[in-house]
Image 1: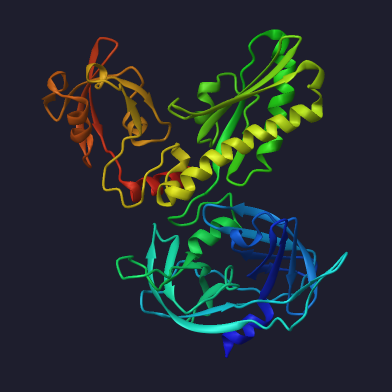
Image 2: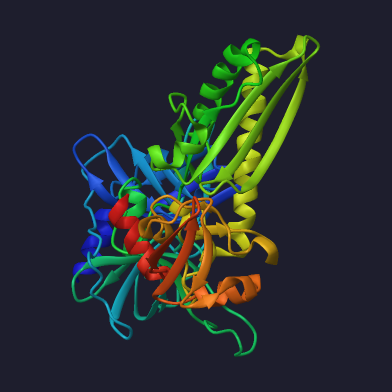
Length: 450
């Protein structure tokens, strides 16, 4: 059958060697020429690997490097210096519907691996298994799929193929087996859909309703004084380099941005990282502070070295430690609120896809007394498009006087598809039509403007 031929030419076994042991999984080729091949797999298969070996259709092991890592979507893109693989195409746009027939290809079950001094080998033939199943649903704005195909350990990273078209509609990432029937997906298999996979293959290009998983941060300098400027410049470039070693971030060099607060408007950044380095003669201190595009701080940490220990190598280690701390902070959000993480990171906001509220992407005063005062407006957001500015005071909302409203009642009044505001700006009053957006509309807005 066609799926068996695809499995033989495009699907490969992945062996990841980690300090904790050997991980086995599946991968499949998405591009291949005569010199190199790129393959998709599940991130958890290669997590922590010191060496990754891909066993292709020729049965030989090929050392692989990681091109893209996405811990949140549980996906990775590998590259090997060997060509000639068959490739699988992503279904774009997805055609499969719940109940449709699917084919899952992978390497389930245990494998006997021989670890030699300079090589890795499989002691038994690595033949992919083809399992038939059915699609059950698409979730989280089409980035996740739920299906039934009786997968097992080793299938992670394998393609889920639309039987009718022969194209990939997703990738296996896990299965849900619980006691009882209260869990919604009990007995179901889980995966990342084709739009989500497309963001891994082309990480800089939003595809359909999916968007970049990486949080784009503009790295700007924040020197305390002129004597620290050269040191901060060095550390700033170091931090930019270190961000390239992290998994969920893209760094934008903001060294030429004259006004750090304008970095979001002058680049496609979702946040601003301020780097400050200072030396008192005895101590060297490096501080990393990250704010969103409205100016809300969500991360700040610093490390101190003695001046004698502040070599370029040690400063690099400290910078890498701080960027790693930032990543762990984000991973904590990702692990507990995956739906929120896979939301509008372009704006620096975490909005769950199933949230039915409307958002203007602006910050108002925190207390009832100043709840009608706009403190900040997110660039490219609905409030900015409507023409609202920081410092504006909302006098009326749909003919309701805000002076008599609490912060909660103002929030409720703004939670509509269309709101007429009367605002005060520089002692003048102005009428503004604000069109807050829901999740799906905001995703389309960001895709159109990025």
